[in-house]
Picture 1 (cartoon, rainbow, N blue to C red):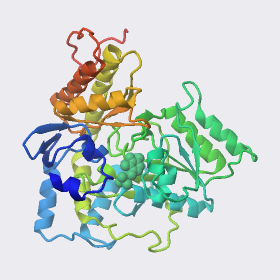
Picture 2 (cartoon, protein in one colour):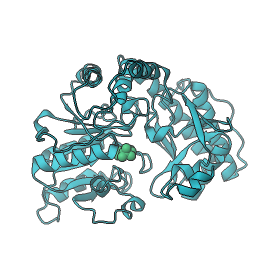
Picture 3 (tube, rainbow, N blue to C red):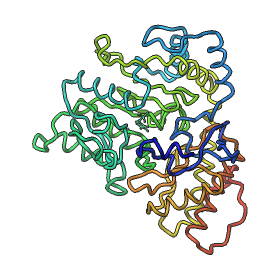
Length: 436
Ligand SMILES: *Cc1c(COP(=O)(O)O)cnc(C)c1O
């Protein structure tokens, strides 16, 4: 359609990689205006963990609209908001022994990050926040200062301040625990880094290229924070809401953040919604200090509650996601081994995985080739060198296989290696023995 060239800003991004006009979607499928069907392995960059137009949520939403439920209510108490809070408290927080208060922010991830950073600064009276190489936290000025990517940072048009950058887990190579460096500079009154307010981190860096922090590193990070009196903020906007298998991405690490940000898949239906969770002692806000017109997206309250009721009332969904994640791990490991030119690596946790193709052009060629075969999949990382597998968690086993097959074929063609196709392996079965 010409209208996009005519009046839409050059700032568009995903639209360039997938130059079609989309108009329908269901589950893991997207359809363009010519009725071509695509498998969606981008899933709203992690916003559609439960798929497009999930019928369970759709019915609840339609009922709510038909009954003239409140659509917009600023931050006033509504029945929908109360019911969301009850479900979140009973099914997410309490079973995990998590004692947190919920702040509704403006409905984007970056606004939740802004609020989290303000809380940390105001409560501690310190200005600086430690963030990490390749971290992504949003593009409004405060969050952008915390973001590593220079493409985004260069567009700020103003000084980005109030942040100290530290090396993420693995940044300096295997076997180097970068939290030891953080501990060192915080212990040294001459390091140039004096008493920051907080540390803010993703457990798996999504936009930064699917870099996974080990559980041990996360625990060490928490220890360093406690030792030096820093608050620990986990930005779980992309890794949370089940992407890694648990509701929160840090559960398995056994850490207890002071502040947590959630957005993306929180609303369940792809509706804009963001919250900050904070330890009760940190709630030192004065009324309306951090406000926003759209803190009460009641449609999102309805679908978020439906998502919690439907998927998180017991452990079944979590187990299913972990199983699928293991399947993806096995497949990606084999693809890398068979066609990866000796230098590709597979990375990720749960259903948050990627293939590092080292070279951004190569990764782009692979995702473009996959698109021609009906798969929507994107790259991430500093040089867009990582093919990022982010399909809905609800995807069928068959389509999960199909999507990965398409990438495998694309890699084979792009790398043009005459490698024989290995014999059929049933990847959905756990390997019987651990022998190599
Ligand atoms: C997407 C994302 C954000 C920003 O969310 P927006 O809704 O795009 O503002 C912040 N942090 C992380 C980890 C993200 O993945």
